[in-house]
Structures are given as structure tokens and as C-alpha cells.
Image 1: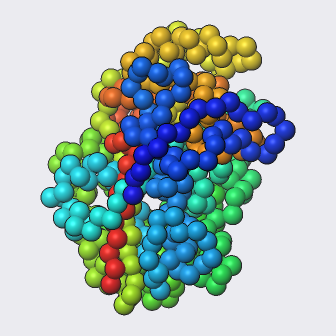
Image 2: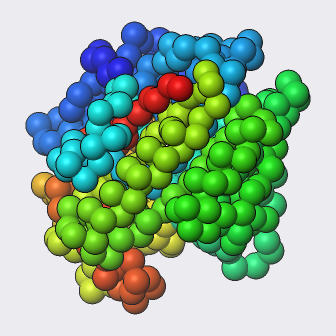
Length: 412
């Protein structure tokens, strides 16, 4: 599912249009191991997502096409009368490949590999799956983003921000694929914990879905079984692999146990599929274990000239006062040399990190400086977020381990 091709960096369009389209059409949006901007030449280079050919943004349209709706089928999925999408938080393709024995059922039915998108983090990928569009189009470009012109940070995972609340329909206004399904007479169902129902993030990315609460793995399997007898499209979510990976690291005993739980869930769901139905299993991102922690709260130089620090530990948005970006860029590049890609907003957009198109109204959400660690490096803020700073497993960056996610297919 992955193909190679150069994705050149070119200047942004002049002001005045609704969308920035920084790159000419290409046969592939990804060049393993990545496409560097000019500032990155000679260093390790980012693994640019395969937008338009083999990314999570290409999956929703293909699923709609498989159900008979008139849309593009980039992934060439075969027709099916009923579809279940099992989303496993944090189960990267490279992680699964490293431990096939923990998930023999999934490993035996691997169809291919997709890329998550940037940043490779849960709310961004959920929005991508919910809209069928890359981050540059749906506007969810980081876990913590600036509210343009307001001098405050918005956390889209928790859906919190100081001051006035954020309207999910305004922050992410793109119609969802689930709304398109509903308009076509399909009632999509979302099987997930009850706590997810009614949250801002759920509203932003799952508009049009009917929420069906289920807690334990067994309850979720049973909820899927029932839902597939009532409708033709069901999504089920499981977050245990990601949760354990964050605090215990991926690859350890607890993590392998969670992967085994997922494997059994997939096998049980597949066994209950109605005739002709298909189960797809994928993930929102992978993960790395990181031990090289750069703490901005212990390095005054990294705070100098910084108005707000957004994003997350593997994909930082650095917001600066007017006129300070160049100095901040130089400082961050020097401190993080050999450990992170540090670029300007314009370089990140031009390199296609957020997709081939970035809407102008979303530019202010992207940092003036974007710092993306690789290897075992993370950029933490121990005073602001001690929990994130204490983790072992992280994701968000442009590395294969974080970008590549499996696409598993089981047909009844």
C-alpha cells in the first residue's frame, strides 16, 4: 500500500486564497524515509505521511465506496453489505510486526500499511478518520493548539481551554463521513465507553454517529454483534494498548497482554460477522519508547521568546511574539541539533507535513516554530505537565514507528 515518490518543497501561495496548496500534484505523497525541507538537508529526515495514496485520510472514502456510496476508492476496497472498523489506539504496524506471536489472528490477516498523518496523535487521527481529510484541511493540527488571536492554548484531547469554551462544530466545521452516511440512509454506530459520549472531541470527529456504550472487551464485542444486525457500519474503539504503552512502554509484558486482548477481540468480532460483512482493523498511530528528555522548564534558553508551548512531547508547536520567531528558531535548532527537526511554520506546511492543502484559517493554530523529535528524544515541560513528562511511550512524530499503522481485513 505504500509507494515512493518525491514531494518537492515549493513556496506558499500568495495571500488571498482560502487554501494553501504548497505542492504540485504527485503520484505519491510520501518518500520513505521522508522528504526534508531545505533546513533539514544532511540530517535524518522526516517520514512524510502518504496523503492521497495510503494514509488514514484515504480510508474513510474507500469505506464509503465499499458500501456503495459515490466516492473515490483510493485503497481499492471491495464491496461489502456491512462493515465494521475496529480502531486500536496505539497499535502501530511496526510494533505489531515486532511481536506477531502476541496477535497471531491480526498478523495472519494483514492487508497492508497506512500512515497516520501529522501529528501522529489520537485526536488528529480521529478527525482524519472522521472527515476523510488530512490535518491541514480539518484543522486539528496538534493536541494543544493556539486559539488564533486570543493568546490561549486549547487542548483538543481534553477539550479544555482557559476562558470561553470551544464549540466543536466551529473548531472542526468539516462535515463528517458519518453525516454523509446518515444522509444516504445509513445509521453509523460508534461502540466505545460511556464516558466518551457527549464530549467535545466526540462531537467534533464523530458527528452523525449513534453512540453505543460498552466498557469491557466482551461488552464491546457483543455491542458490535448487535449493532451489525441493525445497521451497515459500525466503529469500535479500544484504548488499552496505548494507555499501557504510555506508562509501561511498548514491547513489555503488560503491553503484550493488551495486544493479545485486541487479537482475541478481533477474532471474536470476525466470528460474529453477518454473511458478506467485513472487519477492518487499524490504529491511529504507533509509539516509541523515549528516554532522552529535553525539559524546557529546566532550560531557560528554550523558554526565552516563547509565548506559548503547544503540541505534545513528540510534536511541539512553539508560539512566539511578533518578531521573535527567528531567534527562537535558532536557539531551538542549536539545542536540539541531532535530536529533532526544528522548522518554521512555512517550512512544515511546504514540506507537506499536514497534507497537500492547508486552509488559511488554520495557519494560526500551527506554531511559529515546529519542533519534532526523533530517535528517543522528547520535549517535555515538567512543571506544566508532570504526567506527560513521566511517561515512557510517546507518539506524534514523523518516524515510521509512529506513522505506520496496520490495515487488517477479514471477510465473512
